[in-house]
Length: 602
Image (cartoon, rainbow, N blue to C red):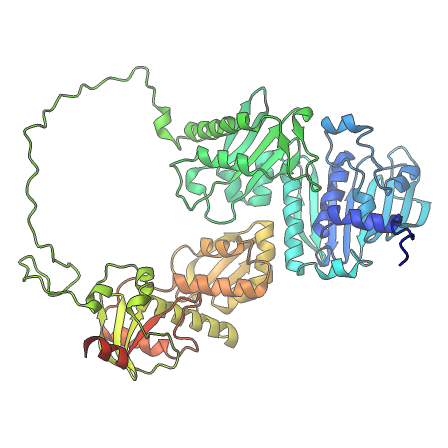
């Protein structure tokens, strides 16, 4: 290329719009979010969202808002065209959801869009079609007041972007998350969501607590404490869960500011601090907290999706949030110590005690006494030397510490080609020691039982022959809309291992049978599986997680009762295709070969 030739050129409008669309329209849920927010800004009291194939094929949003004029219906698709702001100063006094004027232009740049809209006072409405950012049609039509937007074939003109969309289950879950975020902050708006003709949500006009129950389940809605604090910095209101209703996985945790869902890890820490010493370390509270702040005290323009918001004085709000949480917990007697009236308490005098003449009594006893040994007694024999074997497997080390002692097991390796010859014993209730064709096996009985249970459940799914036990008194499984989507996708997997269900409402089921080896809280066992966002999106991952969960719940952690049970465990273990490791990849046994033993003790 000659040095004097110009190489900088201006991009076409279509290319510019597609680049801009990459920030705003990342997946179908992005389209749903932008269109629902536009409907809210238009004053809609009812919004219907209709999707097909999790938004891949079609996304339709219908509202009864104020509608648009024929001119505005075309201008709305131009970049940076907006009714929300006029100049830069308006950015610091925003009271609407969208404001950049990029949403419709970005959506239209990567899809085929049809818009029907009419203002209440107009006799006729306007119909506009735009394909890939290019105006294809505009005409006057008869249509209902409000706005209907139909988005078809998302990313049809950008095959690479379409290729990177996730499975329908994943994309639907993302849409549900967006829908729920909007539903929780606008309970006064009637909302519906339909996918492939099936209604997922049908929400009427409600108050905040009712809407939380409709979205997150009746149990969550009933077991919430109210917070309401008014300060010069912000009005903070909403709900938090009681300490005994916290959850271990996927808690419902929502912050909203001025009608907008936000993510704020710093404030989440403040909420958690309010529960200090009231909940276990592995449990998380659920909360729905709403901030009303003067628009000029926050900056919502720091992220394209507007889920990150900068508060003017976050450090001052932090202790206010902590205090609000603690006050709510105290008023509900969740923190009874804070409820005592200290003003009129009676002071109990404490008598002085002189400890100077006291002596520590001597401690006598058998330091070699082992309560787990059948040969130990209070009148101990003389201490005997501790061999390497006993030192390594004296029952005081954790499994992980034993496994890390590889420096004391030189020449050892895990192999699957082992032939156990059961002439052995149970050591310390946990380990089965038996002979093999090559030496001696030390088997972790719990891990062996876990492998056996996992394989048995896996064979049930493969064969289609489940082992279930009928419940004398069926229990009711109530699911949220999001949980129900995952449940529907995996219902056949549950049934293949012994669960039985009967329809009992829109998102509720009567649990009629459970896997024969399962015990405990059946309902929470199911809900724990459905609430994990990392595995519920892919069927194969869900299958593995379900098998692992059921295997753990059906495997006893108690000691092996004797040689008969031990022999049964060894026999079942070595029928497995992978007897040497658990489904999680942890080793199940050591094999000490004859050469190793001979080198150590002759």
